[in-house]
Image (cartoon, rainbow over all chains, first blue to last red):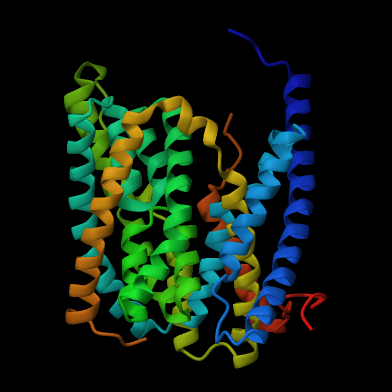
Length: 365
Length: 41
């Protein structure tokens, strides 16, 4: 075992701090660049007779992030700036600001439908992925984190499940790469398919929220489709996020009592609260304030601008987060299970989103 | 010895988000998107 000397740990902390600062400056410059490019691309489409810009800013941001990712790895500086690449952190702050665009009534209506959809989707997709993983003989731990990632919310669900089942670090890294690999094309393709199917923004948003694994790509797909789709997709995905704690607890109980029976561990129900996504509370609180008329129209507009900046930061970070090496290292079987589960998820989410948001709770936002 | 309070990323994002909402609500400070508008005609 190697002991960490105080001077070594001080050096590590200082390197991380410097990496964070340099990475943050780089991200801010890239965000400014994306905003300028997005405006320019939009004006080019408009000048050529297009009603709207089909390459909305999430796509521009992800592409810029991927280019920066390649550049940083080429010059060997990727790990240095890694501490600043915090997709979920920027996204969650942006989502709290998004609360200012949704009234409490809409939040409750979409939230109830979203929770209903989340229950159907999480249970069906989790067990389908678990079953498919078993057929292709994936390890129990990989099966657990993959089923959580596909059925709930990608990376954060994979991390929560990994903690419950004591998965290997490489398994989480692999799932993280896979989540982004699959989510990026879905973020671009699903709005195109939704458009071809003439889905209402509400049904389309619920479909994106129920299917795409990572919350950042859900918000991206919704933004590309329509403003209303962005709001619905976010609320539906948040409803799904809320279930993380329950799944993490159920997995911990299963692994302690069946897989690792001799470990003597007793998972505590407090895990449900520990894993609960706290940003959902902030989002709901802002929605309550906006319903009570606490913000002026100028303030709501300013919050919308701030949200767009934060989402751009998050979308650039998705491109920066991506790593193909981990996908290659894990082999074809986990990839096959993930793809199979994604196809199942996509079809089922479309049916469920249509039934819940097209028939039970028709468009209202 | 008690360890110092450590906030999870989730709590930190929630607190920063709410503080940002409060700041904007009080000052209505807005950063235009894009900031410079250099490329658009």
